[in-house]
Structure formats: structure tokens, C-alpha cells
Length: 193
Image 1 (cartoon, rainbow, N blue to C red):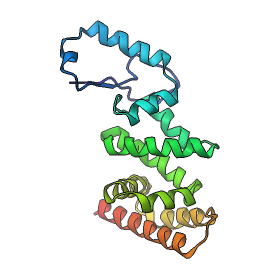
Image 2 (image 1 turned 180 degrees about the vertical axis):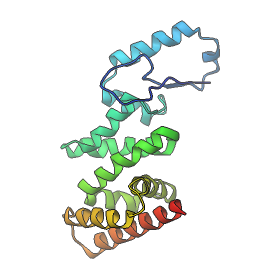
Image 3 (image 1 turned 135 degrees about the vertical axis):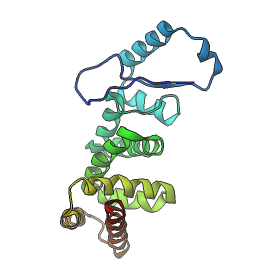
Image 4 (image 1 turned 45 degrees about the vertical axis):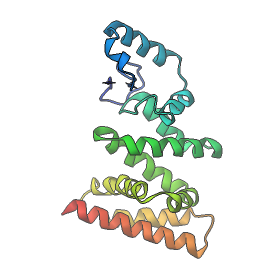
């Protein structure tokens, strides 16, 4: 049984609808509504972003378009390298489970993260399986699709800036970046048709 509570808007306010719990235990079917709400409140009031992220990684909490999930994604922009790497794992898990509104939100986070950390993203991209690579490409592509009909200009400017941010300028890194740009461009063209 899946019990879902989510908020539609990303705000700084905490709401009673901000945590989503997944349970595979059939005993949950017998839990009273008030007990579930009490559990939601306890989780919401006591979990740090790191603890919430760990629950996502352990499949104990289902990511949703809520404050807790957004805070995990915001940690991708951390100045701490270890923290960025940890939250990239969380992004990967979220991206595999995301649908609807959360999928739409992922694009902005990963597009910015990729531009600011191209070396890390390129190394991670080559290690991802095909499904995860396609999800990452889709996340970025939908951001460009949303920018309008002149998306190619935006894509070119974005990848030029991303290329400037490369610290490891090996031919392999540059080639991978060119491949990613090509895949993003092709995906935006597919979406536009």
C-alpha cells in the first residue's frame, strides 16, 4: 500500500502534506489514519535532509514533489565535493522513481548541476547504464524544450559554458560532452515533433 501526501508548490513553509511513505508491509493496511498522520508528523519534524536522503536510498521513503525531496536536490549545488557526490546518488534514485511533477522539476536541478560540475557529471554519465543515461538526457532536454522554438541557440550557449567549466580537458571528456550535447539536441527535436 502506498500512502501519499504531497504539496504542489515549492515553498519555505513546512506543511502537513510534505512527506510520503512507502510500505510493502501488508500490516500498514490496518493502520488507522490518525496513526499514519502521527508518523508523518514525527518524520517531518525530526528528519534532517541527510536522513531523508538516506531513506530515499534505502527505499523507505518515496520521493515526491515536496520540500524534503527538493532539499535533497538542492544539495547537488553544495560546495562540499563529498556532499555533492552523495546527493548525486540520491538524484539518481529519485530520477528512477520520479513521475509527473517531480520529473519536470528534476531537469532544472540536473541541468544546473551538470553545467557547474561537468567533469564529475561526464565521469558519472559514462558509468551510468543506458536507462539512467536516457533519464539524465531527458531531464536536461525537457528544460531546453521548455525554452521555446529557438532551443538550439540555448543548447549551444549552455554547452559552450559547460565546456568552459571543464577542468579535465582530455579528448575523451570533450568527446563525451559532444555526445551528450548531441543526445540532448536530438531528444529536444523528438519532443518538439
